[in-house]
Image (cartoon, rainbow over all chains, first blue to last red; front, side, top):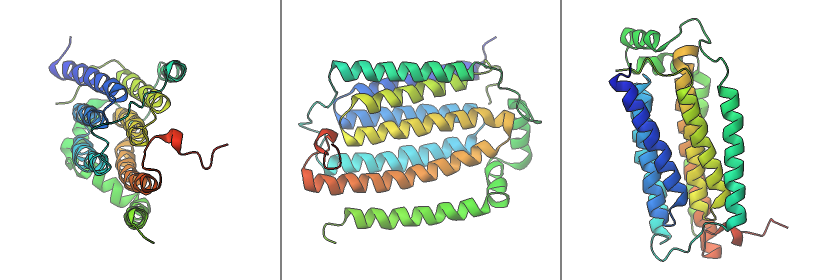
Length: 175
Length: 103
């Protein structure tokens, strides 16, 4: 029996795959970036359907909102959107790309087709839903983040600061 | 509303498909910016696997997704700045032209 959320999962999964394929086959970089945003939105919907509400929101805010705007901004800054040169490689590289993609897909599918679930004590989407209802949507991430991963969180903050300074220094015209 | 009756590995197969598409994209494109976008797609495929496992293996998977997103944001900022700096020298983003360190 296929519930509404399962139908939505397959719909957004198919949309993610279709827009990812469209992303790597469009020649215009702006069209590519817009198709990638479509993929990110579909993945945000899938995260939400899997019970990771906060990750879904962060996906839209950070990926679709910040990172892809940065990409589009650079594409337009470099004026690659019009009079773009076709950049898809020739037949040999196409065959090699498709071949490596299929080989990797086969290997991953072989690895994933084994028995994976349940891995831990608290198993299943229903347990996760109960946990979310118990502590709240943000606390699901926030409590372990500030309790168990405090050092990693501060390291991430330093990393973001360094990336910020590094981007400014790299993009500066004269040193 | 959480999908509860999906097949055991549906999300993992979707993640594998997206990762393979990202790899194929890196192979067949020459535009450096689109290569970056393919790398972002591969990071997202890994994130999907993390989120898929989180009901079974604990919510630490979602915490890792948070870190991956933060690192991806830092990587995109630095990478695009590098592309900007290279574009000033070469006037192109075609990676076939970037051959100084290649033999």
